[in-house]
Amino acid sequence: MHSKAEVLKWVVEILTHEFGLDAASLRPEARLEDDLDLDSIDAIDMAVRIEEKTRLVLSSDDLQSIQTIQDAVDLIHARL
Amino acid sequence: MAYMQWVGLSEIRVRGVDRLSVRGPHLLVANHPSLLDVVVMGSLMPQLDCVVKREAWSNPFMRGVVAAAGYIPNDAGEQLVDRCVERIEQGRSLLIFPEGTRSPEGGLGPFHRGAAHTALRCGRPLLPVSIRCDPPTLMRGQKWYDVPPRRMQFSIEVGDPIAPPELAAGESRGLAARRMTAELRDFFAKRLQYPAV
Image 1 (cartoon, each protein chain N blue to C red):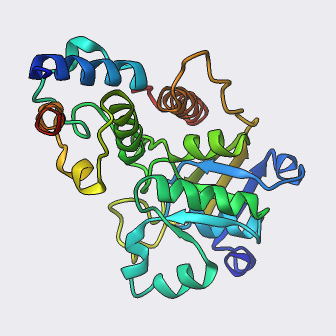
Image 2 (cartoon, each protein chain N blue to C red):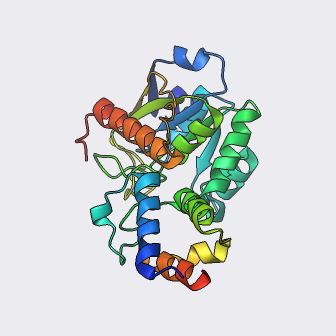
């Protein structure tokens, strides 16, 4: 069973690798669009990387529900 | 536009138009100071598709024109890029305004990355087109009935193509699109002499 801390680490790694974001700025409450300047294409790319890492399948509704880093962590952790 | 020029309401000056003569299709990106930008560019390139704000389809003055012209609404995301790539692959030149809306007065808005994503997917360069309108006409915040005090002069400059970057080993398309968009915005800021943000 993976902890939320571990899932958070995965999400942060994906965001830094995919989008060149500074890990220090990636607080759990950071909003993907407003704070981190992710757009809808980035959301798809993020979802692909999450799926590759976790073997989960994320729907478009799942993606729309993810507004913050914490939302992503919570959703992934609940599904694992 | 030809009528407006003929009766002396407007004048268009173009530099770098020879770059439009190179075999296309062309993927053009432009700043967006005026509502007339699309009309001006269309007068230079009669076959030119364009990405326009989704709201245009709800605007009673514009919806007939944008629908008849087959323009692409700027709905978010991968679907927009798909549509843009499809038009280029059909051999049609395409104009994208990376700001997604008219520029703020005296500056540039933030740039969306759709144009860069399209260039990366197509493997085609972006052709930057800087547009100036003097005096400012139909700019953001101006009323449509604000008649300019003198003849409108549009200065269009077609710049050197900006090639999509080679992806470095392990570089994601998200990073490559950011890199290309930053280069594009820097080009416009320097060419238009706006302060870099």
